[in-house]
Length: 354
Image (cartoon, rainbow, N blue to C red):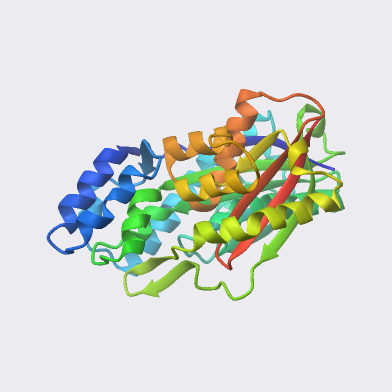
């Protein structure tokens, strides 16, 4: 059995209202794209009030090379990781010696050595700590990180794994890209960083935790490689989004969830909590519908989307933080963690409250 000990999220320096973002996009793209008036409605329908970014507004008005964006990523990812990790450990009254393994997850920048190696130096962690950097999972990455942390801590119940997710999505905003995918990205995505400590049931911190991870389920859908991802261009990453994402949720997720829950002799009706990656308004609505839930049932995912936007892999950890902070749960209840991302893939985890 593995326990979720704590979550910490980083402070992102600049906060923009959705209206600010809409005004920026309208002013910038109107003279360059005749379709902007038709596409700009995505800002109003995104169910977002505000988002957090690493750069001031004027940064987005300038051209930036792939080299510059990579340098920005390495500097900021290191800083944000330290902030998230320190908050996570402080929330758990944990220290650096409690960590046996780091899982570092990102899809919005490149670094070699990877950011986790920098953190070992910055925090003076054990030189023999295990580390696994994971790149390219996109929005599913946070849930996948929790699954792998559960695998490691089940195998070694005395160990603890630090899952770190850093996504600086605004590095991928392209000022010369007038495609619908780029407009959607500007309307939906934001920057975020989170860290989650997962420990085995014989670790000294396990007794203080309320949430236990019991099983996970990974699915990759055939012939869906072009649904979501990055196109590598001269100036960095360019977003790829298919309009079919909501229909993929509609057509696949209930069967996927039922298959997973049947392995654990559980049904959707027995679930009390949903820690779901809020990919966007349509995705949330389709997810609630296909599980037979009333619209608005995903309280914490909707709250995170409203206050932060979509931070790719980090988002589901923000949802977990909200869930743990509220403590609106009781012993014996069950919940589902879920995210979907490039591949096209799904990651599901079942948890219980102890």
